[in-house]
Length: 113
Image (cartoon, rainbow, N blue to C red):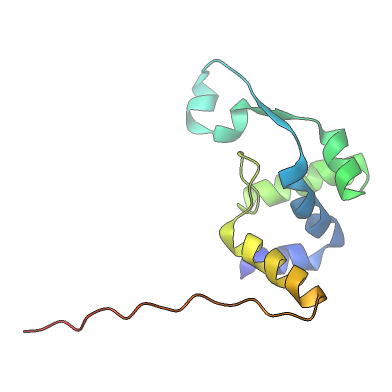
């Protein structure tokens, strides 16, 4: 819920999170000590493109990207945190007056003995 509250608190963060999957990323080859521990160290992309897609100023994109990354809302592979994906999906469906169907929980067999 903390991730959802963060993106709902700022229209710029909301737009940046929505735009992140559409940004082209390149993996930089080669291993450095910092890339061994940080998957973000091998990712390169164009901040101005992210800013353009989100329709925010470049400085806002840079600061917003750092916040989204720090909170685990966006992932280096171009994805979003699962809770954020579900939120955006529900928001999209709500725009059409629909509700998201939740998966049924499986009942676990009762323990015996």
